[in-house]
Amino acid sequence: MTTQTMDTMVEVLVKRLQEPEIEKEMVLHELVKRASSRPNSFQTYTIIAACIMFFGIFFLWHMPFLRDLIAGLKLFTVAVHEMWHMLVGLVVGGEIISICIDPNLGGETKIDRLLRSTPRPPTNPHEAMFRTPAQAFWSWKAAATLAAGYVGSAIVGFLFVVMTVDIVASKIASFVIGIGLLVPAVRVDSLVAFLSIAAMEGIMIGLWFGDHGNALRYFGQCRGVMHLFYVVWDYTDERFSDKMNCSDCTQFQELLGWPASMWFLFWTTFSSLVFVSAVFAGIMVFKKTTEEMYGDAANFLPT
Image (cartoon, rainbow, N blue to C red; front, side):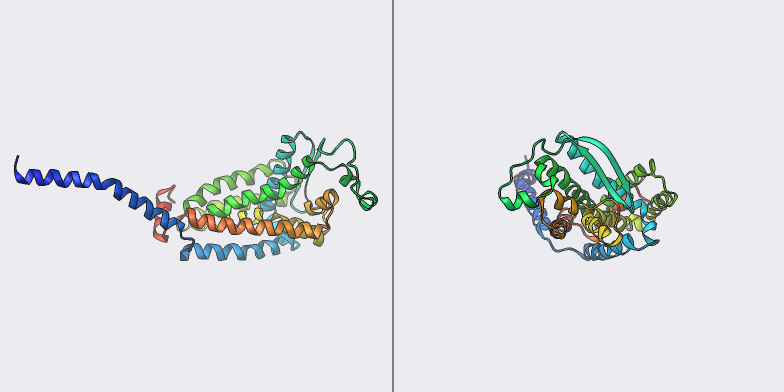
């Protein structure tokens, strides 16, 4: 065996012994990279756009005539909210009586067998005098079913906001949004709402062919913000438009006491915290440079 061969074998052996250390360093480097919560310029624009969208959605949701332009998106948002009421109501043993989903009148899910069969004994004379029938018969099942609407909407909004930080994830989210928009179209009885759904589907398909689908991020972000802050549209719609179906904040007031405005403040704070969490989660999960994002987008269902 020559000296050169021996040197080669030693080099190979040293490299193999160093491989675990190298792998550990690579993993550690990746973890440190993801631990940083500082967004790149690409992500910064995304966060700013999400904040602007809140005010844009608020304006479009309430303005006469203009609100019909987003009737399809409103139907999807209300449907998801009522779906969570329905799912939790069924899980806790309720019986679905009816479900109403309307872009302007709001949603309403009537569920039986959630309240107590006998009234709760009052804790003091003041409560016995001023409590409503709903407060006398309330149960944890009714409270959980009522809370499920805002919590479920926040969960869906959280996922959409997280996914819109990355182009590939936004492409995947667009399939969910596309199917979600089509579901209400099956039972829609308004031509305006049907045309709005068709227009939104067309816009979303068109966004696939621009800048490797980068614009899809903003469409998905709009959906995320709309779901996340459903409590805002729900409560303000009741105050501004005097809609037929009352908001969940008003129902919390009837069921548990506290003014509806206080419930609105509570759930708005909750939604804001979820939004901030979604932003940080998106930054931490999709820790990529702009070039890496575009490179991944060009390879995933390229357009």
